[in-house]
Length: 331
Image (cartoon, rainbow, N blue to C red; front, side, top):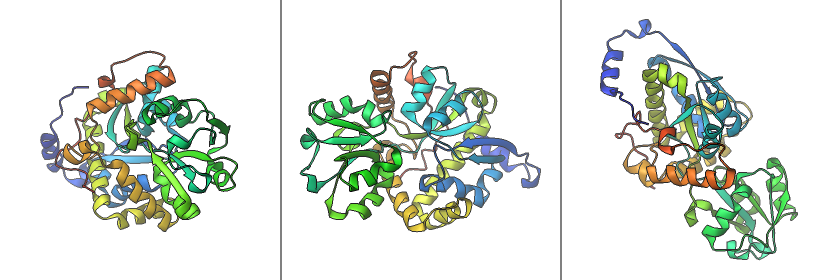
């Protein structure tokens, strides 16, 4: 998507308006799930008053999955959201009016976990074992793509239906041999299984669709381009600030969300930073989308999820509001 937006001009105009006189525009943001470490920069920016300074009165809403977030953004029930990009593409093929404006999980979070004591050392040993996940789990739907990338046969593996919450307990009890899960929760598995834990991130074998991304409703985008630009600029700056100094961001998360443990959120944020780090985000700008990976993400979704109507993937995202002066750190 090609648009014209002069960040320098907008910043200059904003600086000429006294803070107290700046009109606050209400903007709604639905998360992909309940608040977690990956959302801590948003709460940090809220507590620091950065959104307010940019003229944004941000309403952050808890979510219940990428599908709901993409649907709500697509119909204009909320202005912005966070959703797994493949899910957003699928919603777009069904008529959802949305555009991705910043990558959060620039690497795919999809990961397979197992216990080494079962004799599994890698995908080459998956045959004859059981894999537990929900029936509609993206990792199950895209299993043929994983098998192809890993060079193993598609058959020979038995799928077992379990709920998301049952994944770790079921693996621990030996009722399944392998589970699929997101890498941002990796440390919980390390604590549960210790040295017996085996795992493989899909990105390690070249299967790397984009994960969670910030999306915006197209009508809201068209009518509020500068406001969307201001949101992205503040959000990108906040994520980099939290990369540089995580502690205040975890503080902000814990003060805005209940039921979270500091240690777990600190561990989770460390994994989120790994998911944020790619060549594009380190060289072009934090949150930057790479054209070739947008295309490969689209192709994966089109192949395994049956898009209802095709579209040009270049029309579904933009990097226009991302500063190339704000980059993700190297490992």
